Image 1 (tube, rainbow, N blue to C red):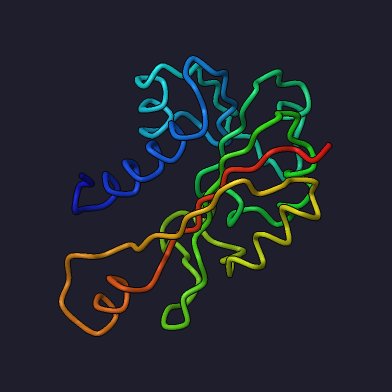
Image 2: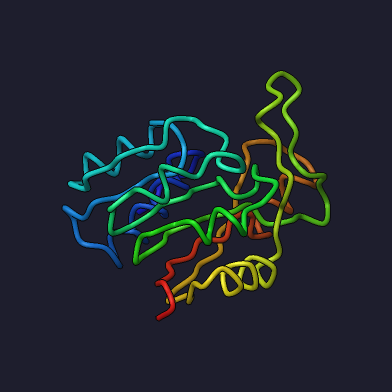
Length: 174
């Protein structure tokens, strides 16, 4: 069913999770610039608007003015210094988000070439649940999944069996 390699495997898991809870042609505000996954959501019939690449820790105006019914944030919150404020600023009724899970056998990700591509947070599931609750979201469904790599060794074996991503569907609390 799912492709055996990344990112297609992650994309397939995520799009199936989204389609299980959201009907197209729902309007989506996708946090982050246009990317292969936002194009996939559009191809599946969703009406997708992406943020413009602004620093969401500083400029949340697009979140505050959006009328989208759904906000998606796939691997976004780990890059923010203040994900609580961003989560509180979302105006949508529904939120789909995924975050990388903290791995005991690996340090937090930091690109050697791109100063924006680094993780300020890597979560345990209970930490992300608590953050969502504090921001006024109720988790309706969640899923963890692995991130296998095509390498030989102890860490690749651990990645085959240790969940790396946490995916949630939430509704705004009344």
